[in-house]
Length: 315
Image 1 (tube, helix red, strand yellow):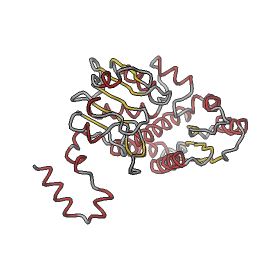
Image 2 (cartoon, one colour):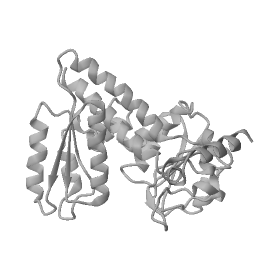
Image 3 (spheres, helix red, strand yellow):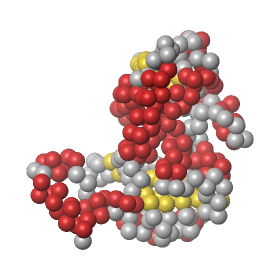
Image 4 (cartoon, helix red, strand yellow):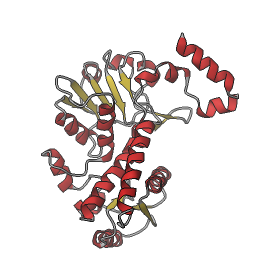
């Protein structure tokens, strides 16, 4: 009753246009204690990074420097890259964005990568995916200096992650773990975790990071039988399959924690996750929203990795 009255008060205080643009939905508001907001966590991370940068620049050190290479003008990539650039500015990083023509030859792109590898003023380097079909993405990613691989995709860094050595963790799974930690799940001993999806960028590393925290991990994918049954037994469910609202209420165990990595366009054009949020919200213990969820944490983890690379570089 108290929440209902508070929401009604908010609705009366704001004109309808402002309500549509900024206030939480009724379902979000009534279940806000269950929602792990990535935007709030990311802001806290960026606030701490900003102070960390100041502590170095006040001593006469240069600012951390992140270079992003984008090939072509994919709208989704452009939006994401622009977001990264704004993030850098907000925490005091130097940001270099190199936009290259979609028809650039692979060898020419490799020359740019090598140039930034050799530039001691560059701390972090990433090449935005996807790349045009005529370019071998693995060849490009493997050419990045592992010490500047703040995306965590180089095989050397992936190998270090697998054997639990210090390295740059892939940003999206890294962000997922931080979200679990934010609600007290630092040790996952005795918990069953299911990862939906087996990509090299999210699914596989997410499974490994869950194992680090002592979870019992199962990965399901397009070739798995009885996916619904397996998911319905999960204490922790990470959805990273790229199918809008695939996970329904019957897929979810009561009291489960859901980390929704999916970012899709719904039938109405709005962003939705892989999980049917409205149908599962009453059943879960915690859930991440889409938007304002994992995506913003991915960007925050990129900043953290870059700061780590910077500290190693200026030594």
